[in-house]
Length: 500
Image 1 (cartoon, rainbow, N blue to C red):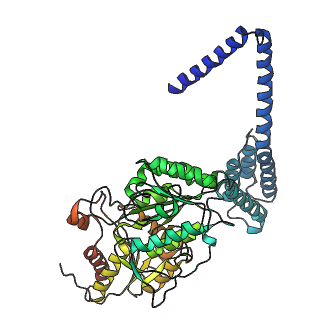
Image 2 (image 1 turned 135 degrees about the vertical axis):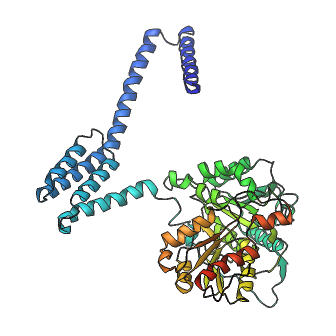
Image 3 (image 1 turned 60 degrees about the vertical axis):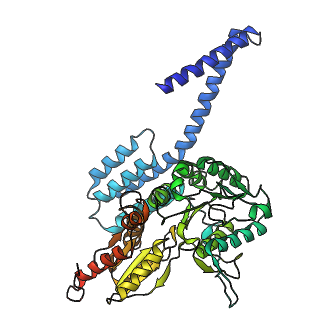
């Protein structure tokens, strides 16, 4: 095997090194043999010391669990199975905490019909074990204290009668200009970011203003763009690394998943790399520039925030928020939104948008639409058409996928509408399924439904080329209208008669 060949090559190098030591007279063969014996003893002693230090708390936990099971057996009518459970646990030479947890559950199952006060002490100890184990295994996936993005105070965008209306890319340009001016550690780079100012011009003129070290071009190699960003961030800089299109995140996803998203967690908060990955995606016409592979990202990049603003104002607020925090994040801008006009906030340099807080963009009483990104405008258009036939839908923009609706705003909407549709451009069973699981299972939204939940995703393939390819590959006003109309037909077929 390849591993065996590698070992043989390594041993060959060691053998040659020993021969060289003998040949140049550094040491005699007997001296080298003695060194090797001493080294083996030291390694074995160190290994045993490390193993004992690892096992000692497990043994103490096993001892306490065994004592509690024996104590329960002494007053239980199921003493025989409890004694067997305890004996099996005590006989494990090197117990892990999983063995202890399994034994406790077996003991609780065996005594499930007995008075609760008999089992109180064991239950309390089990709860402490579970809490401690979660702290050991699952803590510090995100910053929960200083530097956490969720702790950044919201500052709302401010406007006046004199606030100009700009193209979306111009609004982002003003945001990045202000950020580069106030944060000397900020560096932005990516394919065409420097001289051109990125393919959509959000960095237009900023290389001339701040220099090629702060705003720069890179080669066409997404994985090295992200690798540079991780190294810079771990050394105190604040990089914005641009991956030109969302589809090309695939080339950097392995590094983003294995190295960036896991760094804070696997070092238990000891190391951080607050990289901001900037990209654009969703609605366009083409196979390789129109993808919405969001489910792959949100499931592979846990440990990063994933933000999906519907317009450039929301995107600017997210950049401001993240630059006040110390966590890695991905921002996916809406690709066909750069030429749409938006009003420039007077506090473009300072306003922030909170993470995990959806926005209700249209109120309604019949059904709740949950969506994000480019689908927001389409959902709002469909909502207006549904209104003409007497269906009033509530449209909610989730804004961020990681974190997702931290305060249960969507469930509050379900309490009013009793019906829900999840819409996006990802594949069936992708991010719509994730949003549905979050709302119905995690937040308990299922209890408030009077109809089956509905998902309206894109097709199971990449978007086909051209306007017609886009139209039939992804949700559009017509498919959203018909999907929701059909659901309301089930509720009241006499009122909402099928027209096709």
